Image (cartoon, rainbow, N blue to C red; front, side, top):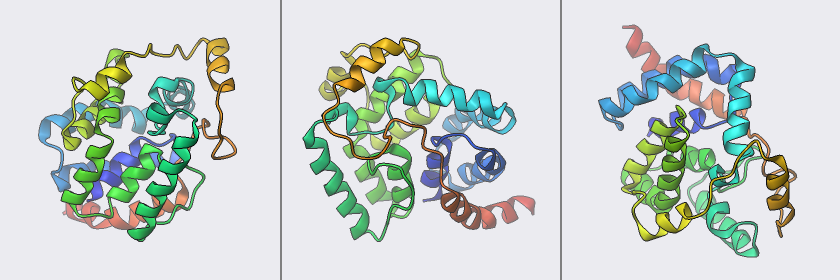
Length: 233
């Protein structure tokens, strides 16, 4: 389902290529119909911001939210395994799922990075994609709740994903995660202390901004071209 590919792009590190792709992303969200009208309208502030905003401001906001706030990390297993060795086993299992579906990682992103998961889900039947998304539903619901508290335009995107996953912030699993105090991205000393406790590293810099790779954008452009043609008519 192309909607998952579009949402993957929106959750990736902002680039000028991504800004240029916003009209195509908007077309896909409208054409697919996976998100209802209210959800698509709620995404419009983010779409407009991404399309028209200053790229450096967009990148700074992204880093503050998702890179310098551990409780908002888009690396899903970090919320349940931290940097423990259990996360390594979960990574291997997820990679095997990807490979079994004919999906190979081509960029520096970790397997549990939410945009990567969404890219994979875009290659699967809708029912299967929603079932897989539900496995991470409580984490996605927690991210949605935390982003809503911060009044960020990314919140409607995570809320839409939580709805697709059939997950809410009122489950015992979500409530346990929400009991953890939110990070202050401006408190660099506190964040340094958190990351110094990390036990395992899975990539050269797992906490750095992960720009969406050009090959993903190229595949998106190819996949979305029929939607743009239809919209032009």
